[in-house]
Image 1: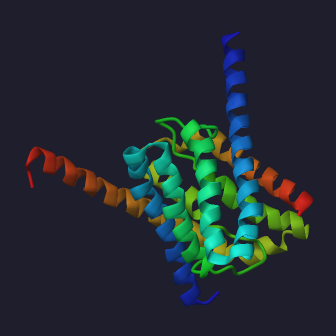
Image 2 (image 1 turned 45 degrees about the horizontal axis):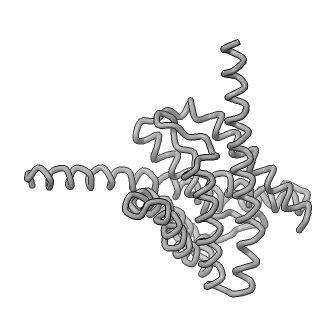
Length: 138
Length: 111
């Protein structure tokens, strides 16, 4: 019985992650481009605020995408990035665009990993600094 | 893709997760949920202008590579670097990828 409840919880948890990621991807990869085409840079900036703001509230503030303290953080950005690539594969009905875009994908992934690790390293020193400042040890 | 374009793409992808990790939580701490909306405009909107508005991330082919991919991978890497378990996050990662592919399929059905 306990096992069943746990399994059911796991299924719902992963299902809600799929729905949250899918909705975020759909909004970003269809609405954003229209805003940018209609109003240029201002449209794209505004789209970021209404789409990412609302989707962040749904996925991470309310928490439709499952994340817990001891698990590695899965951001909705992952789902949105995958959605952008898969949209063009479904539209062209072939894997050729993936092959063409693979240099960009590799460089973007490497840049993202470098940025994430660099930011965490910087953040650690910032926290140490503020701790030292409050304790009066400079 | 030339070396110059690879460098600009790399640093475009570097900047986005960097800003999110350093600033987003602090903004939410300072302003609550409204801080998240502010961060969406000020961090994502402004970085979008850089990466896609003026084109710092070069698109080498037909499949759109969004800066969101950099954020997703970067935040995951940052979390692993902090010592959180990658293995336990695998179901969520797979679900996110399936959700993203499903979203792509649905968009291709109406666009």
